[in-house]
Image (tube, rainbow, N blue to C red; front, side, top):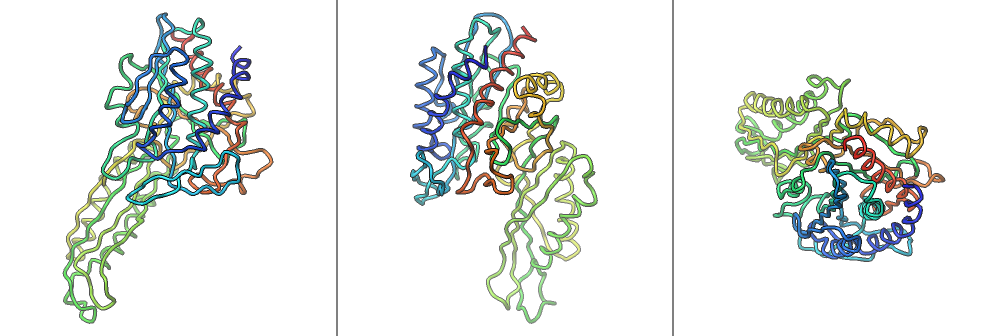
Amino acid sequence: MVSEKVDEIEPSVIQWRHHLHQYPELSNREFETAKYIEKHLRSLGLDVETGVAKTGIVAVLDSGKPGPTVALRADMDALPVLEQNDLPFKSTQTSMFEGNEVPVMHACGHDTHVAMLMGAASVLSSMKAQLNGKVKFIFQPAEEGAPAGERGGAEVMVEEGVLKSPDVDVIFGLHISSNTDVGTVRYKHGGIMAAVDPFKIIIKGKQAHGAYPWKSVDPITTSAQVIMALQTIVSREIKVIDDAAVVTVGSIHGGNRSNIIPQEVTLVGTIRTLDKAAREHMYEAVPRKVKGIADSMRAEAEVILPLDYNYPITFNDHALMDEMLPTLVRTAGQENVINSKAVTGAEDFSFYQENVPGIFLWLGGKPLNVSEEDSPAHHTPEFFVDDSGMKLGVSLLTNMTMDYMQAHK
């Protein structure tokens, strides 16, 4: 029954995706995207709330029978990227970003996420009589990060009560992958994507002429030692055979002349962890390492951790993953369900999972005639996913919802 209905809705899902791809919008600016989604949800007779976390859309399908509330989430925002694909629905949109006019492209597949969730809403609405409980459809803005000076995304949606009224029991989400074969789905128990914790370190020394370094307290050599020492937290203090961790310094600023040792150096970086204990250890270890080295060099150091935002670990609840694994196998076929390794990228879907059990999956979007090596990366001008991958996504969202309801009615 579900497969037949998904077959029927697939042409519409593709059409919706093409429209969304052609008219992308940046984070917290998804105004027309939200209107497009709202019109479809209202056509299904759903109870729709708009303006959640600025541009988010939330709709509820009530079966009228007791049972759990299952939430399904899709992110809506695009990126400031100039598309270089030759598609009939190629984006030529521009928008303002940090005071500049920039090209805009769905370079991470969020257009497919929205189209698939619109499709799942259609299928589930048509099968209302077979449901028990409620389905909450969450269309989220600003997954890629809110503009400077603003807040947005899943964290704000949670703050504004998206998991309440009705209270959500479980949440399911997926992300299409340009590097994974169409027709396959990747899963993992526990941490599937990393927590992200940006940091800033300010090393303060004493300025002096570069010819007389003994008169200085050199923040540059101190910073060099700090950068190298931070790597030893991962290599010597984290049990990396259990879960990976990363600490990266991505920006160094200090000084302006070859013959002046500056007063101050600023380092900015990111920490990625896949385990709660490792994350807590990094929070303790980074200030400890920095202070120890600064003290040894007679410098002063300030550590700001987290810097401006942070995401928790995208953590798939073990019991829920066990329960839903047969659904994945039944929907995609055993050979197409892949137990995957974690990645050190981050996803703000993790904010929902901090509050309710949730599952996040990777959905194949790479054409079978393209090798993984030749498939374009996410967030690039060449990013491409095939329309045919969305059919499995609609089926997964629908079947996980129905199976969970059936087991918990």
